[in-house]
Length: 417
Image (cartoon, rainbow, N blue to C red; front, side, top):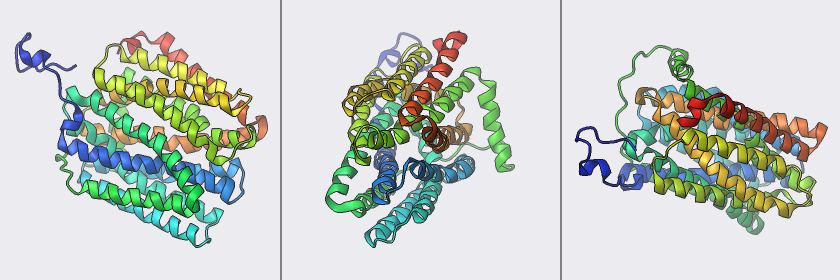
């Protein structure tokens, strides 16, 4: 916990409990918008994959290509959006991204309902949705430390992680049920409705003005300033290294390749990944709730690296299972580990980043966390055609495990962070 240095040690201010982040009205509105948007983000990857595999009868290569298309604009625009977030009206950027996402999802619903959808249109719509997401995503992350006190930061990140977890649980399961009852047009229609409600939550949101920027310059000069900060702080650089490893390996293995593995090797269909993701989300919710209650914790660096080791090992085992039933307990353990990893990694990066750089650093964070996932999905999809889906998932787990074992055993400072 960060102490109140305006009072002498031993006073009530030093020991008084810190109110939760949800007591801050502005953060509540942002959290509601994030929660609804997160349902769509988790669901659209699931529903697009389901549409490609079962609706259009394509294989895992096309599934991976659509996921890749979702990330192309993120890779191209997110750094620009991060620079905007440090300079311009952050609420307006959120609204622009939300309206863009709403428009794309509405068009998708109409095309599916009219039976005019094709793999080419799916790819184009995925690119458009990724562009809208890229505009708002860095702002969502950068606003958290701007709306709450430093003492509330890890609580706020944990509350956001719980929202993401609920989205992971509710999104695919809800959309699977709706898709079974009302077809793909119903699944995409519900996502359109959620985005519309999320837009309403942004109207009363009050956002503080940005801190003065040091140099307008070009976008790349602004981004270089953020990169220089990351490189200069050895611990932050290692945190990003681990984030990159996970984004290229375990994340696409679980979020993309696993769906095709269930369909083709374990005798299920594209929708059967939903219960697995739901159980994983439950594990994340439990560990996030623990962090939310405890607030700041000692030796966070060691804790999240151990969690990443456990999660990577579980992903390796997922690729070796002989039947669908084994995935459920493994997914729960994966979620427990993932909750600690997600919260500690982002929290430590934000706690060690000055506010004037927060938008750009969070843009780089988003680029790595979300933008690299489609690239990893495309690589794993291609690898799966050579060595098989199960073996590919296991390789993803081994890659991440190797990187985190290296950082854990060679950097004592990171363990004590």
